[in-house]
Image (cartoon, rainbow over all chains, first blue to last red; front, top):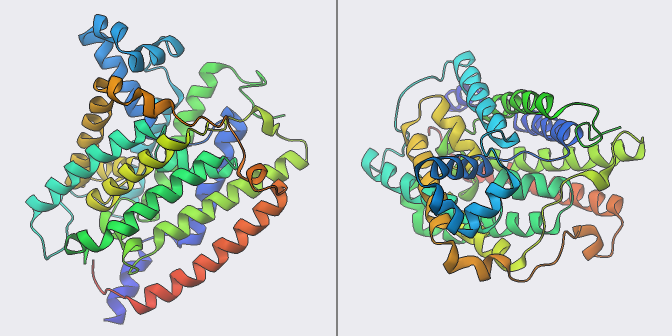
Amino acid sequence: MEKTRKDHSRKYLNPYLGGLLLGLVLLAANYIAGRGLGASGAIKSVIVAATDVVAPAHVQKNAFYNDYKKEHPNPLKNWLVFEMAGVLVGGFVSGALWGRLKLKVEHSPKITSRRRLIFAAIGGILFGFGSQLGRGCTSGAALSGMAVLSLGGFITMAAIFGTAYALAYFFRKNWI
Amino acid sequence: MGPLVVNEIISENTNLFLAFLIGIGFGLVLESSGFSSSRKLAGVFYGYDTVVLKVFFTAAITAMVGLLFMSLFGWIDLDMLFVNPTYLSSAIIGGVVMGAGFIMGGFCPGTSFCGAAIGKIDAMVFVGGLFLGVLLFSETFSLWDKLYMAAFKGSPKISESLGLSDGLFALLLVAIAAGMFFVAEWAEKKFPREEY
């Protein structure tokens, strides 16, 4: 049994080293671009760009789209869109190097794939919705905000993790 | 002196190209740390795997202390960095909704892209959910715009709000992180899981 655990952990980077490297990437983003990392902002850019193609009149009428469009005349020519394209490449390369490229639904043996996918969809919808209300997700608001000592970043971080801990008991069957 | 793009040392297009490279670094670190696995991520909420806490807080204190030193050496002007504005109500309620999404979905947006990149179907479904969620918020914005704009506090630093210098706050946060790492190591021994 001890061997299984060791084999498992050897496949991944030491977490403190991973954290140090992630901190350096975040530092580079601030030094070069004057901003932190992000993820949900790229999704917003794509949604605004797509809506503008499908229904430009609708974008004019909706304040949330319109404000964004005014600031970013070309929503896809956006720092976060290029960064997230890089994340897909970097994630894929790392998965290839470590032999982790595989199409599969990852779930606890106690639940079905179907249940896992239903909860993944609900979780994604909630996270997407919350990231717009909270002006950024775990990367953009919490991590990057904390690095520049933003009060809002610390508050959002505490709200995300606090809520997940508070609800962990009710969703334990999905995970343990 | 940094930030390079704000000081017009590099062009806007170079900035976008570097964003792509930074993203590659971001993706490489997330995936090789195990953030492409929802079961590893969710472990932090049950104690069996605390990789999220270790990576997240090590990264936050590395970048925070790094920025303070770079400012001290005159390499970067901290006043030119983007600091997220604080809208108290939406920061808390948005965070609560995201936290619920985290424990149900097992990913956050950045990590779900990593999972999707290596073929995790649950991560792809989560990403699909993200797009729906962002669209849902945008389309129903008129219902939330008051909440979205409520309790605006400007872009305060937490150190100012607590009446501490940036350096002292950073030192305190490093100490708190060290304490959490100690608890995290203990939790992994107390709630071990052999296989997940």
